[in-house]
Amino acid sequence: MIYKVVHNIEKCVGCKECVKACSRGHNGVSNCAILEVDGKFGYFSCLQCAKPNCVSACPVGALEKKKGKFLDKILDKPAPEGDHIFFHRDLCIGCRCCTEACPWGVPKFNPNTGKIEKCDLCFDRVKEGKLPYCVEACPEGALELKVVPPKPAKKKPAKTEAKGKKEETKSAEGAK
Image 1 (cartoon, one colour):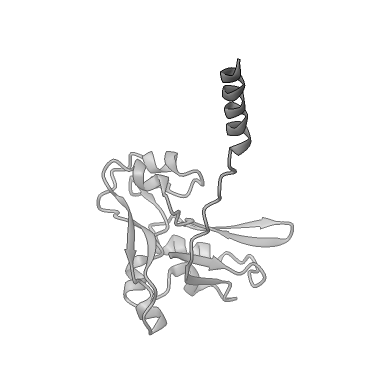
Image 2 (spheres, rainbow, N blue to C red):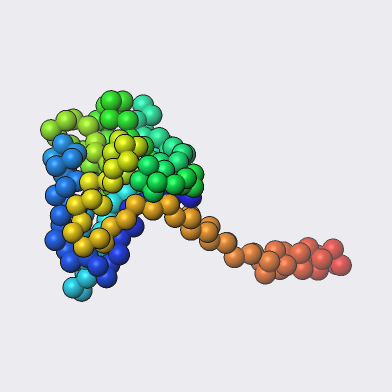
């Protein structure tokens, strides 16, 4: 299971209150964005990847994939265990290795702090029973913090045809 901010495109009006609230709560840098395509608005933030390149690229361990039960206080009931990418700001040295490694361009360098900023689902707020800044600020209720199952891995097509041809070639050579 993965913890994510889930966006309902039908409810979103593109007001960007989520972006403003995130920026206020994170040293002037927003860790989310609202994109408009064909009159619809989409929310973009950290995808909380199952195999996060940013975590493996960080030379000091400032990014960590954590497992835990983070939503208990928000849901007022036991929440399923889930993963999320946690950012240890105090460990970040501002090398930007994570910004290069992330295929989505999620971690952003903050020139005000000399460190990166990345959505950590407002972990400190969530463990206090508060919603992430973006979710709390959305006037339309288009954002929710949820635990979602990971997408199943894509199966690679079997190479039986190529393997079969090799075996036929060997058999034909052996018959000579």
